[in-house]
Length: 310
Ligand SMILES: Nc1ncnc2c1ncn2[C@@H]1O[C@H](COP(=O)(O)OP(=O)(O)O)[C@@H](O)[C@H]1O
Ligand SMILES: [Mg+2]
Image 1 (cartoon, rainbow, N blue to C red):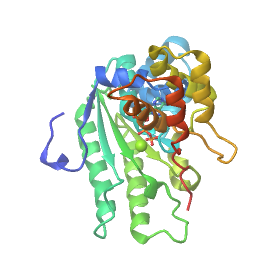
Image 2 (cartoon, rainbow, N blue to C red):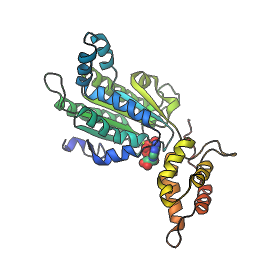
Image 3 (cartoon, rainbow, N blue to C red):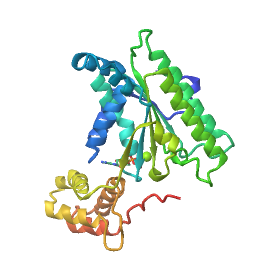
Image 4 (cartoon, protein in one colour):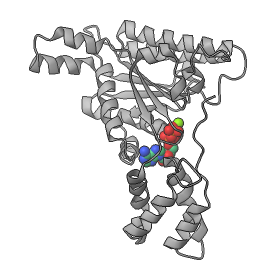
């Protein structure tokens, strides 16, 4: 897919799958196996409905009602939950698993709303409408006249907190409502035309999801902070190479969890992007890393507070 002028500045860099880098990043995600499986299946059905038809004709030849129910599901999956828990990482890499499973080429078009749409009146709405416009036109090129598709598109609407917010909330600004409406129109348009497109929306605002968006979601996958077992997997994957014992890693697992005066523990990204580098930098350049030093560093770090619902 070439970068046309229409796409300039609208999306971040597109990712084409299969892609080795995405495959590797996906395999590094911990504790998300169920999410990976569910998301791979949902996206596969949306992007390659032919696959389900073939499966049905092999196993349940007379079950066209059943197949129709599945194929008419809305083309939206919502990834919702705590910050730093792997939503963006999963959304940006799952396309690789889908492309390999279905043996098709996929393109991810990533739209991040965090730093946009807050300026001029109408900007958010315009951004959303243009993103859907472009996605639909690309997907139409992939659809053959016999209904089969030669590939698919994943539209990623990341950092969509303002969109996820319920339109019924009184304090919601008029402009944000218009943004939600543009999003819903876009979803309906893709659904009506049965295009090989799936939309992934990521939001931290799990409790405020707009009912109209909820209704259109084929699935809502919830993300949370790592439990004890998951903290152990993340920490041991880098620290066991240093010769840390299970017991020493477990001490770190404990201090990075909820403690007496703190109800929440470290997020995945607190562990990987803050704690591990802090341990390394504390020792560098004159010392080696020791378990006591690592523990001291961990105790000095405050985990990211949970996202506050306003
Ligand atoms: N489940 C996980 N397993 C391993 N690493 C993770 C996981 N979740 C997040 N991370 C790490 O934290 C970083 C931030 O995660 P991200 O997907 O951006 O979080 P968010 O849920 O806020 O979108 C990722 O790049 C990755 O390195
Ligand atoms: Mg994110």
